[in-house]
Image (spheres, rainbow, N blue to C red):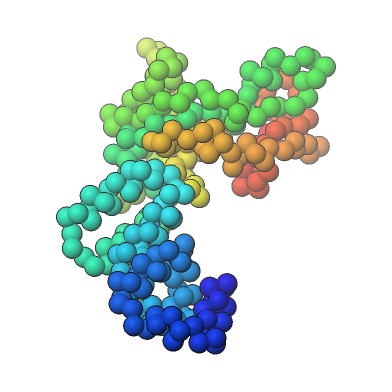
Length: 282
């Protein structure tokens, strides 16, 4: 919106003629626009106010910079950027970066994952609620079920394509996994964990696949949650801050029966988000 007002004021004051911008080549205009615009909306606003930028706005010069800025805020930026650069070197499409931008925006809407894609990720494994912290509280203070989101159980969980769970934590290596809901294209929207002993197989938790706002991946169940770790080794805040920064103390309604612990509790620590409150029973 600010771009439109600035461009209109520029025109009303005769800036176009004074600057001689109409004499500049599309390449020059593209370089100017690549510095001015920080988002797709900025490009559209400038072109609306100054149609002379219309041709330049579709060039690789502009969209490469937009991709770098947009993807730089997202999960696995380094891998996504390198992959795009490698493809660009083998193609001569003058609209390559604009198409790459649109393709990534569309892919970010995907809530199912490819098996190979899943096996190439390492996950941080956490509990919604920490029963260890709960048990360690004094009896007279054991009225709050603490969150487990602040403590990692493992940060190297890999779902291998043969159904094994690979990790440095021995107790997790006893788990196996399989697809529950496979789509027609072979992608996964839900997986199930189980523990298999010499005596019997114990079916574990089902984890549904979710896409995060930062384009990362989350496997979410009623007891556990996992998030794919970025190759750039993000901080605790970057990976879990959207949840841990909004933990609230929620009181149990009188008509609800708490069953997550053999000990009674009246409160729980939980992210202040209605979706999670519905997902996680008492």
